[in-house]
Image (cartoon, rainbow, N blue to C red; front, side, top):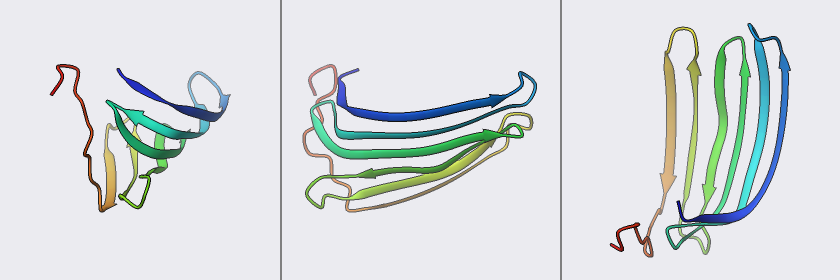
Length: 101
């Protein structure tokens, strides 16, 4: 997958095999995918009591070309999930797919 950027990440893992816990913070600066400059991607997620939560997944596009924000959760036991998304002024102008289109 043609993706590049500068990654900064932090991961904390704990708990037991039956009750794992984890938290992660991730930032990718100067993110480019399929030749499209995407800007900065930030993610904050956690796992506790069999609930995976994405507290923040935010993409800030360069040069005022939009934002995308997601949050949600997934219960590993019940397989129930929720998702919230909000975006503004998202434009993709330079995307080149693997087949050249």
